[in-house]
Picture (cartoon, rainbow, N blue to C red):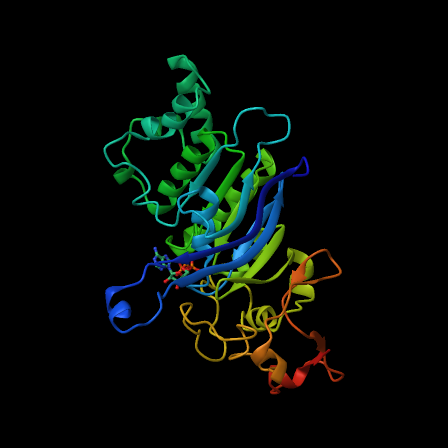
Length: 340
Ligand SMILES: Nc1ncnc2c1ncn2[C@@H]1O[C@H](COP(=O)(O)OP(=O)(O)OP(=O)(O)O)[C@@H](O)[C@H]1O
């Protein structure tokens, strides 16, 4: 692995529940598994954030669980390295969606934040641990006066700040943030995102940021991966992905997100229903909803193709803006065309 690659995910797949159910056995049917993640590859270099975006059920949280080691891949490899210059085993911390269940309600804030410091032996004396807890509280916009309080005494946004302080207390080489602001009031989301952006820059954090919100991922990530039915269908630097999406699904998601406000919480629904991950369509998985579908798409699964910016996309065709540009009232399929 090159020196500054912290996370490398190579051809990873995850099938849940592959054991044959009795009912299927009696009916003579094969075991049915949910292929939650299929042949996903990406890398994250030191100091960068990769955003993973996609509709509910596309496999984002499964990627988080695979990277954190909570579940094992059915196929493929995941390698995690330490920050350049460090010699200890790489450390990973997670920040979850729900700050209400992520903290132990019987522990003071000080105990919650001090625990990773003690477990990893990062400070040893009582005074040094306390000083570090205070420093972390200040870093996330809270104060040393909050040390003796319990999680119940804080609002959702404040609790998420405490979860962030606790995650940073372990001095992780890698952070996974799984929908860290989705459970918060809209007014609080932007504050927590601003804090995370500030910390990213100050601490040169390396992270995987999972969200179903396109505007959030645009603000937070250096690179973005777009997932559809367990597959990474496009991956590219954030700026160029939004400028020139190559996969029809990415293009439709961007087009369907008016205004791109942080408050704009969910991905806007796009045409058609999401097929079941237990029986994904043959050929290109997106063909049942693609406005540009061609006969080949129904039979052949597209390989990953390179983008000029070093990213990749999985489509047999090239997406091009039509001659007339964006005409009012016309459908997306009329504005864009595919070329082989
Ligand atoms: N433990 C499990 N056993 C069986 N199927 C599972 C399990 N966990 C997830 N799945 C299935 O795998 C697919 C991917 O789920 P996953 O939670 O990774 O998606 P997601 O994109 O994170 O969705 P959400 O945003 O709703 O959490 C879904 O069809 C889900 O029902």
